[in-house]
Length: 144
Image 1: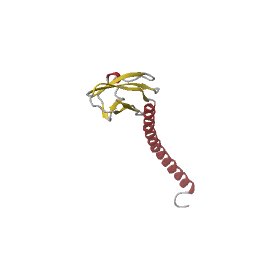
Image 2 (image 1 turned 30 degrees about the horizontal axis):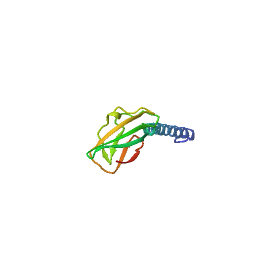
Image 3 (image 1 turned 180 degrees about the vertical axis):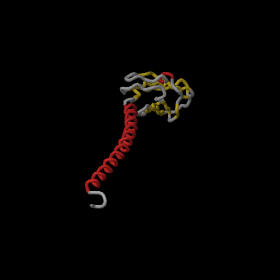
Image 4 (image 1 turned 90 degrees about the vertical axis):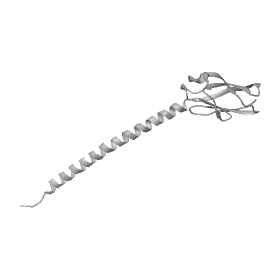
């Protein structure tokens, strides 16, 4: 009689070990792929939403009543296809952040526009007006 494990039993045991290892790696790998693709999908959706919120400044004019009281009137328009929410629009005059502006504090619907007036206290010949939106920042240069 032969001593040890026969060749058939050894082959069956090796196949069982191989199938078990493949199962362990599959379970580990599928969980890893699901978590990383889920996070990437959320980031892609957020980026796409931002890109669909585009702002434009169609007109901008200065009204100088005195050298200490200048008003910049402009029309802001949402040229994107998604609504811009409150807090997603910021206005800068000469690279200085302006206070929250009432006309846009409630947001701006898709394809809507709003008339905005910004009061400034400094006088200069050339002013720059920046409206920072979710996906872009148009700049208008004015002569006051």
